[in-house]
Length: 377
Image (cartoon, one colour):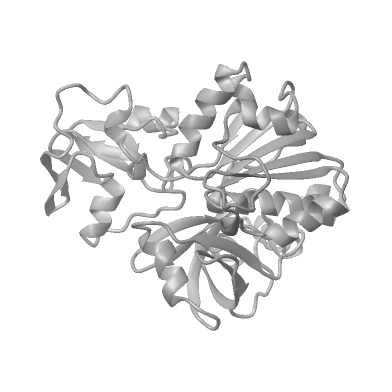
């Protein structure tokens, strides 16, 4: 095993030595215990710092607990999942990939946000949590995405943009990056001081704020992130990759605005952002089906009732049944479960693999039971 790429992988010497030892003795070249020790499904992290960014947002710094100090490598734009109270929630990393002694995640208080509000209200320095990841495909690929980036952010959706910006500065990457950041008021802007400093220091970084409910002293752009407003700040978008991250309402609005202005759909990238707020608004939701009507879900000997418009993952967790889960947006596939009977509506967000469809799997975070359903975990 002399591939030079192996030298770039953490603990490569240890893995290579075990493979060679097993091969010389005729043993199978499988070493799950070693892999699990190096890259566990979950690892413990400790909160070492909490920064109040705004009145409604905080940044939490996590360092790894135990003997292994470095955290897994990640790409700017990826997320980690925190395990709290029997459920998981993904949070984008806002720190730079160049720094692996800690991860920063930036969380904003939202109505009904059980986990995000729990973090803001109850988690502080010294607390220890379980984390998985990093994961996600919302990152820059210079081969396919080019060197001209426009990022439309709303609220805490600025977190992955912050990671990308910090990486550009830390690694001296030759990439032009224009952040257009929409907030309700100028006091809601997260990272304002650092963003202004980055834009001032780097000729390749531009930052604009667009405020929907400006105060009397605001002199910048106002309104929504319409194509007209965006291009008035960035210039023509032609040839540039546009990233979008923020509240769900921003996604459909930005897509309509950008494509309506002639920007190609394949030059727009969206961060996975949870199950749809109203799955019945999707065009494929079957007509005449009562979304609030309850059906019976069976998992082995366990049966329970749940409304059709509740994602299976949420319903299972409420019953104390906890499949693996990470993105909760239909993308990663960790929460997939097999459907033995019944009809499931797979939301538009579901990124089902061909094998999922062949063998009857659904991604439970965006799978909705239309009829009585039998599942196999």
